[in-house]
Length: 420
Image (cartoon, rainbow, N blue to C red; front, side, top):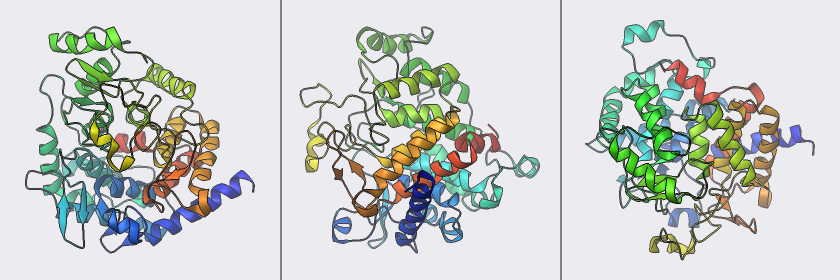
């Protein structure tokens, strides 16, 4: 099958999967079966529903577009009194779950999805919103209705996030195992989380965004930054400067006296997409990821170098369900969903032809086992693993395909339209 026909087939299969996984309460994380119900994949997950909303809005399918915000409503209805969005909502039991050490990124992704579906700047007063330039694809969006409808929830969510922010670094702080990589030992200041936080700050016109970006570069890549003026920043950087091995990529996390240099692919790709990396840092980051072959044969592997069991970073919980050993799950497995962000980052960097080739490879991963859309693949033997019928694989393909087909810098344009 020709590449264009194959991509068209993947587009159709992606829409079919999302329609199959669509419930009255929103998009389920995976297709309903006995195993997915037992493992809790038939809930409305915060990060999954938000990422799916992006692809559904850009799918070209009217039913998916109209249902993109449904899961966001379900999450808002179960928001904690302090403003935190749940990790997931079990709609059958009508209960929200906030994970063991809390879940920080559901709130971030929820805010991003609201802004993405709305179009107009949500960080400005209504009078300024009316006069603001519109997003190029506003016909897909709700014209500010979501920001108005969820204004109290947005204020609470931003308030909760600001309470997690360090008051000198202006970066979010978190426990380990409390973001999308929820059985990985990243803690303290985490790259993935703070790339999203900088983007949320741009979307909602929050103060100190410039300092957040500056400190992301200074703390997560001290090898190319000027020595921090703040003495605690200098100390954090000093440990990495002495011991880090991979100096081309951003560190996955920085804590007091220890850090992660396993090469967090999702975090580094988000640093490019969300505006943390400048032009030189974007070239450096993408070059390092290519050198590590994280996209071979399918995009992308989640880390460059998995954490082995004899590492001081290894945690007993990483062996839960025998899941996070080296080359598996978050510790070196291949995730097609993350591949969609990789493809979009290549488009952002002006590598549209390369991005199209990577999109074809992503489609091949989704097509394994007769279009099973497996959650992840083993990073070495390529065996499909995890839950089949994964919604966000389909959604990530759809927004990546939109980026490739139109040359659109999807996240950059959304930020620009929201007063960045």
